[in-house]
Length: 183
Ligand SMILES: [Cu+2]
Image (cartoon, rainbow, N blue to C red; front, side, top):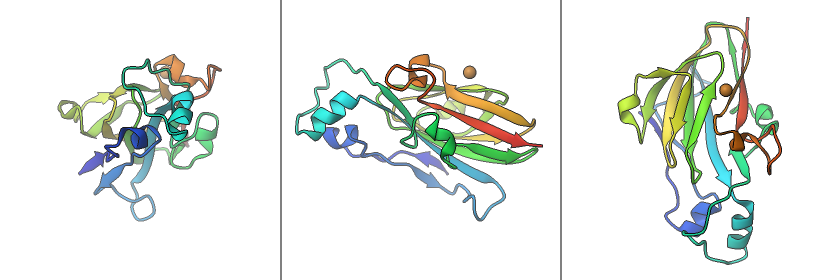
């Protein structure tokens, strides 16, 4: 049970986004009262992607300078128009969030308002059961967390690395979404 992250082993294809998420025995939002959201995290070096798309081979030794940071291939504020990225719950509801880090760097998610409990983790299984407001999702990792909506309001969730809440250097943007709990 849990979230997993298959990807292309071909480096050029992987860096162009050949990576996915596999959810095993997680409930479907339409058939179960436990809502399930998914966040595919990534970071893009658009210059490198354009050069790969033009037929160049990626240089694994070159400095990596990403300029876009995405959830489900969107950057804030477009993230909150994505019903899979924007968490919307009633007070007292429980949801699961399946998270996969497809990028080339770790992403540390900070939840405002809530602690989440780690339900599954491919890279940090020793943390299953931990309840934290800040959750590192390592490069290549997939993880499932459970959130109990125990207070109403609108709360941000964002990468704690502040460069990752920018779009091409402009703040706010990037890997930022919201949890909205209605009373
Ligand atoms: Cu924060």
